[in-house]
Image 1: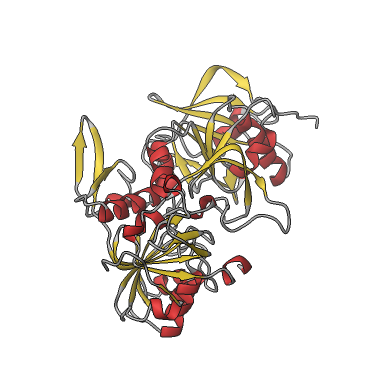
Image 2: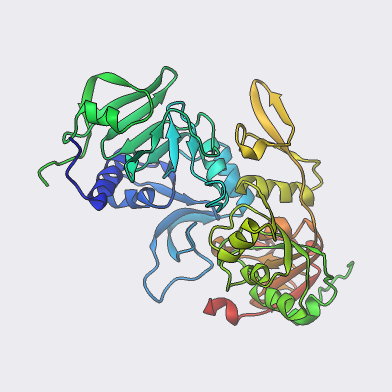
Length: 228
Length: 226
């Protein structure tokens, strides 16, 4: 069976699980969609330093209505705040931090991710060609690359044997988080390490195009409360 | 330009000698750090066949996004065009050439163009479309793409403050690509909120040395209405 939850509940479940990966003092760059929800579930005792690629460390919450300035924005263009201890810098420094391995974690959504850790999230030829922005640099340079995505979209698996769309990065993804569980990409291939309590291994296999092995013992997906 | 004091002029005066077919760098990331009044002057002047080097093409009704929507641009070199429907449409219809550059590579290519480097080696894009047609060099077992410098005829940039010798001070993360572009064009035009006297910006706080800036334009209006 598949979890009897709404898309919004699935997204919250994924964001909540990714949030558990952060340690106090981690530097992170979060993408749009589910990744942008992750900070809502990081406990206050874990101080995550957020980087935004247009040149800021220590990004705080969105600016209040009527406050803020276009001179302090997040990567999506929204007016945000800067926290005490933050800093501003130019784009060469920003991407120097990213490529140079100074960002601990990046969390990204995706169009496809495959069993070899390839990720494709920047274009659909002939349809959607927004450009890669900073995504290619982030997946190349961040120490850990996490994909946070719904397990399927319109019934089609996001985790595939081999990406058919143009790649953002080759062999760069470390972990994949979905509403059905958590996968790790290892030198031995894709491994399911946690499974949601409201699904079965058979159903995970049915909704995953990629081949994967199962960690022994397979753990329950952390942070999932099936009653609530 | 070789002048000690940098001329302070109107936006229209500042862009008067930008010809059709010019390669123009425009600073900014999304709505931040964009020289809006200089772009409006380019629209009024009707400069055509521009090769636009900018991180993104904003929205079709804002800033340099309007240049694309007006059909004034023949080629865009950018990392992202996803917010501007007109850029995507003209590109899909084959009426606009777009060269996609990963954003970190975009910054480094401009830096190379401005600071005398013959190119840069980056691991970004190895094994992707960004590698196509480029030389890949292996150093200590790791692959890097050779990326070539970018330069322009004109750079239009945005800062918060200038002084009369052209030193610039930026604010917030509106700095982005502006200090890089200030070094990578033959003529650099800086749009600022305010021009101060020489010495009024502490030398410790200067982000872009004034010798890189050729012209200064003061604007404080439309930018903050955006």
